[in-house]
Image (cartoon, rainbow, N blue to C red; front, side):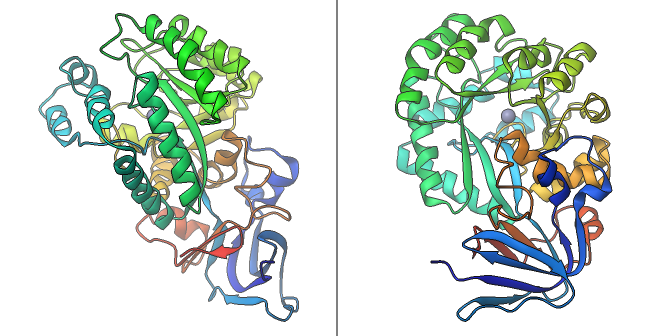
Length: 413
Ligand SMILES: [Zn+2]
């Protein structure tokens, strides 16, 4: 039995309870942050039991009392799009880009995803696990308590399975909640003549094994010129659906590839990037309940346009924000910094930006029945900052790490 925990002397408590109560993460307004001033919060059995303002309730014998020292308490952050399992470095390619080469030109010269593929295929499971665990530890230090993690640097049946086993092993070791995604369609492996032939191989040989060993929760595909067309991906997505694997997609990042519409057609949980999503695709996403995941770190690090959030907000989409942490196009692992960049450059309002890395991000992973809000019955995943308010947190650009990080009612940091 876990002891009860009582957090007292909270200057500002961000509950996001109004969203959790309605199980809604779109059309986020300031009131949806569910702010309590001079508050307390009680935790029972690792779950939020209650919160309120004024005099805190009694704490049972043996319970843990924790003074928040007048600081800010908010839900643990949710990073709903990352690529943390890889080997090797792509620093040289970063400098190639500074010399004027484009992402596609670097890929054609053997760099990009295939560079990471070569190093990742050569690495042992132990090496990959050590790297992944260390990266998850850095996410945790920034207050991230739930993470979506993708494979996609293996690009062979055997090597994708190795990456997914590493991610499942990382999930066992890490205190964080991990949602595991099989991104087999990240690039066309050099052994295959066409995108369609690898997609078919992945559909017929890889996914049945993924499902049999329960190695992933979701699948993902990079729908883009030079990678996979919507048509190429269909056999893979059809197979995933049949096997009960959920769908997320890398969509319309460099050009309009019809992916927003494809995401709607397949009932994907999220379509991510979306710089060039068409208006009809955006409307279809809104109707089908596909979350829009914005990744402004990639725009900062790769010099591509930012995604304007407004049309997704107006279409009724849930809008989440993630780091897209990966070795090539975005090495930013600081989700609070990315939330501020999203507010600035993707034109999110303050409440939208905060929800985008908490409840809306949990919604994008369909873990919003227990994560992303400090609501009665939810997992007690939260962070404590020595800051006055959520305004201070958003204006900070991720410079300060939280003093405390709690997961399921246990203090991890
Ligand atoms: Zn990505």
